[in-house]
Length: 329
Ligand SMILES: *[C@@H]1O[C@H](CO)[C@@H](O)[C@H](O)[C@H]1NC(C)=O
Ligand SMILES: *[C@@H]1O[C@H](CO)[C@@H](O)[C@H](O)[C@H]1NC(C)=O
Ligand SMILES: *[C@@H]1O[C@H](CO)[C@@H](O)[C@H](O)[C@H]1NC(C)=O
Ligand SMILES: *[C@@H]1O[C@H](CO)[C@@H](O)[C@H](O)[C@H]1NC(C)=O
Ligand SMILES: *[C@@H]1O[C@H](CO)[C@@H](O)[C@H](O)[C@H]1NC(C)=O
Ligand SMILES: *[C@@H]1O[C@H](CO)[C@@H](O)[C@H](O)[C@H]1NC(C)=O
Image (cartoon, rainbow, N blue to C red; front, side, top):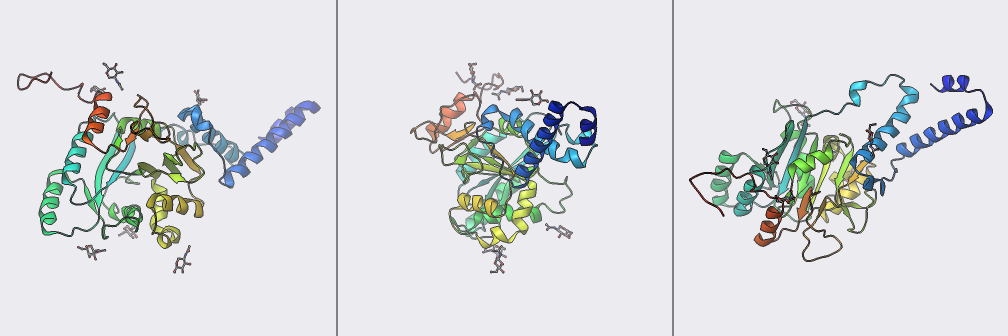
C-alpha cells in the first residue's frame, strides 16, 4: 500500500503529505503499543466515536502488515453474553428476593444473554445450608466461592479468578461470557442499556465502569468504582493465571483491582461509563447525577424509598397486563 501511494503521487507537496501520513500512522501504532492512548474527552463523543477510534487505530497498525483484512472481523456480532455477579452475603435473603424481582421483570432484547448471579463465600450456619440450597433449587442463580466472607481480603480476586474453572467444561459456548461484571447489591443495572453500551466496544482487553475519582473523566487513571465494573473474558482469564493479582489481594478491593490492571499493563481498551452510571441524586455529591433516560446503572439505593423512586422513574410497571384479578390505580 505504501509503495503504491508513493509511485502514484509524484508532485513534491503530495509526496510530503504521504510521508507525513505514514509518519502519523507509525506514531499511532507506537501510541497503541505503549498502551497509553487517552480516550478521555473522546468518551464524550459517544460510543460510536470511541469504537471508531479504536477500530481505526487498529486498522492503521494492521494495514501495513495485513493487506487483506477479514471483513467478518469488523461486522458486529449480534450475540452478547454477560455475567452480572452481585457480591452479597449468604444471610441477605430479602435483598436477593428483591433483586430477583427487579432483574426477573426486565425483558431482554433479542440475542442478549445476561446471567444475574449472587456471589458469596462459604456458608457458615446450619439454616443457610437449608435456605440457600432451597433458593438454588428454585432459582439456580447463586455462586458460592471457596472463601471465608471478608471485606478487603480478596473476595473480588476469588470471584474473578474462580470463574474460568467454574465454567470450564460446562458444555456451553466459548468463552462462556464475553464480559463479566461485578456489582454492588445496592446498584440498579438496566440490562438492555448496559448491553447496548457494550455493542460498539471491543470484546477483549476491556475495562468498563465509573472512573474514580468522581470528577475524573479519564479511564486510564486510577480505577473503576465498585458500584459496578465490567471486564472482558480474556481479563478474567488473566486474573486467574497471573501472579500480579494473586500476590496483591488485600486492601480496598476495587482500588486493588485497578492496581493489577496497571501493574500488568492490561486493558488497553477502557470505557468510562460516567454519566450513564452514577450515584442516586440525593444526597448530592460530586458523584451523583439526576435520574435521566440515558442510564445504565444507579448506585447507592440504600433504602426502599430510593428504590421506588428509581423504579418509578424508569416506568418499570408500565407493561403490567390488565386483568380482572387485580386493580392497581
Ligand atoms: C463511526 O463510523 C461509522 C461507519 O464508518 C459511521 O457511520 C459513524 O457515523 C461514525 N460515528 C462517529 C461518531 O463518527
Ligand atoms: C469452603 O468450603 C469447602 C467445602 O465445603 C472447603 O473445602 C473449603 O476449605 C472452605 N474454604 C474456606 C476458605 O473455608
Ligand atoms: C479445563 O478443563 C480441562 C480438561 O479437564 C483442563 O485441561 C483445563 O486445565 C481446565 N481449565 C481451567 C481454566 O480450569
Ligand atoms: C509473587 O509471589 C511469589 C512468592 O512470594 C514470588 O515468587 C513471585 O515472584 C511474585 N510474583 C510477582 C509478579 O510479584
Ligand atoms: C416514563 O413514562 C412517561 C409517561 O409515559 C414518559 O413521559 C417518560 O419519558 C418515561 N420515562 C422513561 C425514562 O422512559
Ligand atoms: C414494555 O414491553 C415492550 C414490548 O415487550 C418493551 O419493548 C418495553 O421495553 C417494555 N417497557 C418497559 C418499561 O419495560
